Image 1 (cartoon, rainbow, N blue to C red):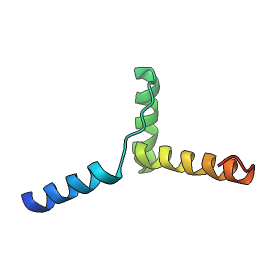
Image 2: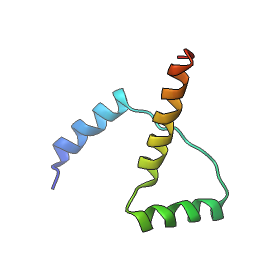
Image 3: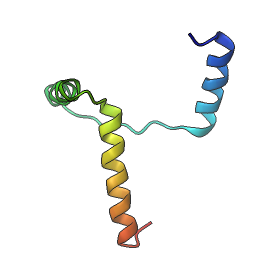
Image 4: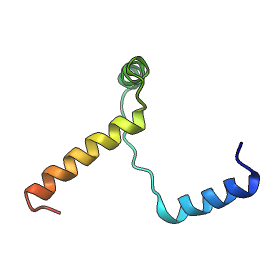
Amino acid sequence: MVTAKKRASNNRWDAANMTVLGVKVKKDYADRVRACCEGRGDTVNAILRAALDQYLEQCERQGIT
């Protein structure tokens, strides 16, 4: 279990170093994605991160970033 002091430290680090990217999708689409993730043992965050990593790699190969 994380102590309150550690949680506060983690929150400060996250605020300084992390950001949230969001996407709007229809509820039924989101439900389908969540169901697939649950069935495969993935998280939505993990599959979005993998897709973004792949996209960035393509951009780098094309000299875009």
